[in-house]
Length: 77
Image 1 (cartoon, one colour):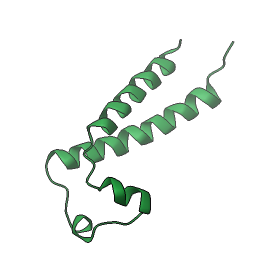
Image 2: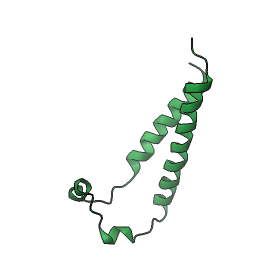
Image 3: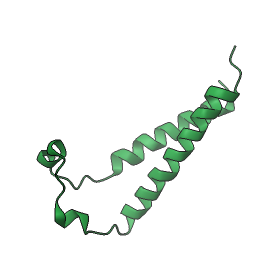
């Protein structure tokens, strides 16, 4: 395993953990119908929700970039 593989593994694990930490605000019934609650659409994220949301975005972009690096630029045996 190369440095890039280990880094990709760590980012993948962190991304899984941060996604699991996110709180779902939708009702399970609305998830299948695609209907969004008007009350939830007007709520703003505060505190830890903002941190988790930004962390998810950063880790997702990092995961995508590392995956491309590992797939295209690292020579495999």
